[in-house]
Length: 354
Ligand code: COI
Figure 1 (tube, helix red, strand yellow):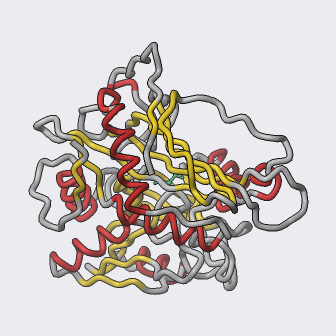
Figure 2 (cartoon, rainbow, N blue to C red):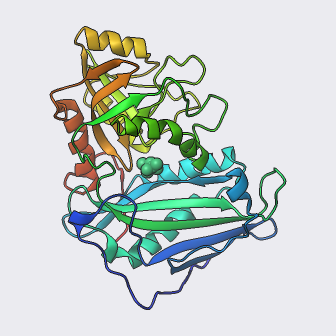
């Protein structure tokens, strides 16, 4: 398929790197493509970033049939532009598509289109360590129909946003709050798909946590409310007695690309690495006997985010000395060095754009 390009006449200006937060500024152009039963995916085009005109009856607005991804482009020290494991994101995008009854896209074509879009927008990529160009591929259901069924028409779009750190804390430890009242997702549901409803489901507890001074909610499993699952915006890791532990993928946890990268590096470094169930009771016991050494989140937006405090009911567990732990820092450095091209791509994780 031929991608048509319509360039914006008056180009915008990228904000200073130092002023970048997360997801507030968007680049000049976006990628769009449509789907219909008759034509399949068609009309791929790069156009000026613009509002989408939708019928108020569009199915996405009523029943939430949508999926998205998050990945990043980085500038390396030579000024080259590179992506971190983008094929993993498009694979997961199609897994989410299947799970949400959305037609899959051609992964190779999606990557080629993304590279074209990034090439056009290369001046929007920030350069400082900790900043990057965040990429948000999304598919929405567009049938104007109020019956509940899978839509017959869709829009795929990709928008780009120059970003800094996801948390205002930057690489300083954040505080997270274990929800005992609410759950995010249940096995057999859609928790492992990257679909908006999972994030909508997280809002109520997140607001409560925020009021208490906690940046994020750590979710427990929805069946027994006993085992730790994920943080919503990132997967979670613990170091207990020198064992690197993350909850096993069980159908209600998102299979994070950064999560997978941490597990890979941990094994390569000969750490004891476990994907297994980890209960709050085990966490509290480890805290009480002094073996809970470190805790961190891993995600595309969050990168590696140290956790300095967790709260479960009235139990408050403080981890470390207010600074990121050594193991957390080692993962942060190894992963960001590869992402920013400051270290050789030993794991074959980098895809060059230009
Ligand atoms: C990402 O890490 O890219 C995500 O999609 C998490 C997001 C909710 C900020």
